[in-house]
Image (cartoon, rainbow, N blue to C red; front, side, top):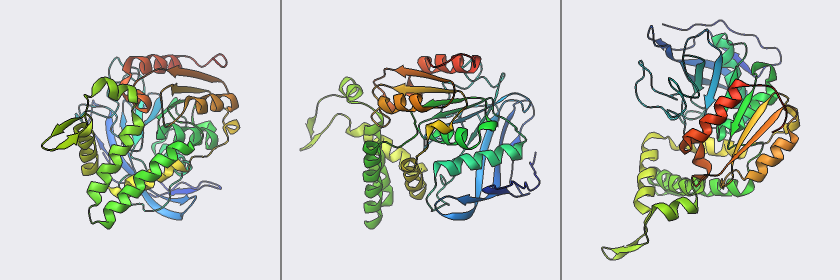
Length: 348
């Protein structure tokens, strides 16, 4: 089916939706749909731009909607369906009988603005929040049952809750807070310099692959690497460390599917995160990982102390560090189920 909207006039708005929304696909009986929304948006650091926001939904349109977004490398395809059978990036949490069941809620997700590399300009996390609001308008969704964001998605979720509080009932923020920690920003700045150096050598793909390898070290922990990889060894006259092949595989796989401009602009966007938590009045469940090197647990404590509404904090221990939201399936599922099942009480 094709999805069409009329232009929406938003008083004092930062965006304008166009009648031509692009191609949407829906197969009867599956509830899975993909489409693209064309809109003009006033970027906070780059002025007016026309962009395309790609989305995917899973579940019947009449169900309560849960928006699910992840890190900068996560896209709109969250889980497999009859229509789109390839595995999604959060397959462990979305599906029949899982924490986010499309039989009970409609799952909506997006490709981040800039992910395709077509938007070569600074992108604020708040710009992403505004674009999501435009998408909700176009789809006729007055309010989200929940916004579930992990990593960068948690940052955008906090922006969304501050800017558009009437559009969600609650927020679940996993491994993301109100600011970019200076240590984590330094990691990302080095990654961006590696990509730039690769471009100067006419080898942008290799530069992006190396940047991804550096990123993997920040996502995971020394404890995991100690348990997982062997000691260094001399191979063919040179020393190879135990994690070298693993990191090379991660880097090559990422570089073949990610535009370098998309990586650079979304990496920058993380570092633009800055929000006053007191502005957020909706219920928030914050999930922090004690071993997270990018989002220190202390930042989660500070966030919860300052949030203006009902707040629950859950701290997990995981050798997977920042990537625990992808790896600690059972623990994350229990917290999601608890958060979506109740909205009463105080800070826990």
